[in-house]
Image 1 (cartoon, one colour):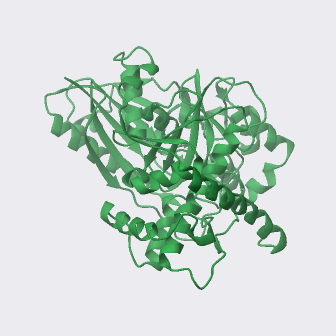
Image 2: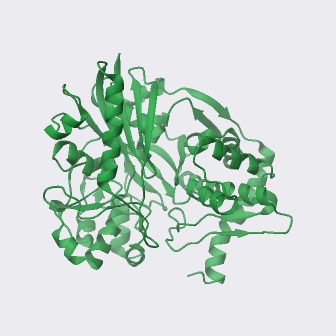
Image 3: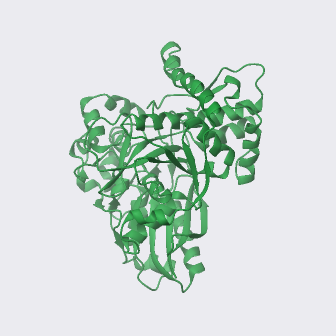
Length: 495
């Protein structure tokens, strides 16, 4: 039996899944990753600690498999991280994650200019504080000495591959989410680099998602105790690979993820350039693109509410279940209570780093179960906004495949089916991004001939269909929800 080891380097956790040659996940492990937030707007991670977490997971899985034949080790990673390194690959900074908003003033300045609009059209990445492009502009202006000393600006996955192989390489999936990559001509975007004040020498060499390396640095090979040559497949970004992991590879199928943040994505053939309508376009492969958008405030908003208002820390599935059971006690719509979830500002669809959260419609009859349900619905409504923005591009979606913390709750899955008015599908598998990395590894090493074959590996666990009466209630609530942010920012002068 052949096995694939898949590693997904997230923001909250680093996860590893062992998959057999039939595409079945047989074991999974994870390590918690610590984020550093010393000041408001900061969100960093120590790259050495992330590397050590990956190393420990690989050591454990390789020991567990022992003499079994390993086909490859394949990787997924969160998008938008960036760190500066010197010529020896030694970090000069921590890894600055997508959640860091220190570059928001520069993003605001660039966003509505002609160069900003052109860069968005050419790179498929919105001009926002999340993007490495804006982080580079921030570093150029706020830390000129470090900016000048940096040999390369790389993502956390690039750093890990450098530690493995001594090469600066980046896959098209991670590159296409930097705001620096021309997604139509498959090269670094000159206009974006000019704005950032860098050239190609400051960035890694771009390789396809199927690229693999085998010649480990001797010290790392000794740490992993690998005696044979194993392909390390570079893979892609976590969003695109989640679509692959769910088998959502046609334009009528969307993949929805709620983790720390959240996203809705659809796989499309290579598009022509044009208005993106607030959506992203990233590459899964040179022939398959993923379009959609992400929100900042997913599970993290529920975690914040549970800790600060319910005195419950969501550390286990049982903790989450107790919070969701409380929400179930309130009716759909939480008796007209609405939560704007913008605790960390927001990406899609409002693109405002300064946005803030609020409850609207709070009355004396509302209890803690109403507030809890309103938070969950408030996290879900922005994802419906993204879905509608995707469908405005003449993409009609009838199925939604779901991954992330939401899959632990059939109640929340049904809530989404009712709110979105779409058939919602729970796949029988492990982490979708890690599975997507495993499938990409199978493709890279010739175990499958094309990516469409992964559909045979993906098994449906449960299907949730829309309750039309509740859907109509949510439509009314949604109309109120989307009107609140513009009204508040205009009339109350929030910023």
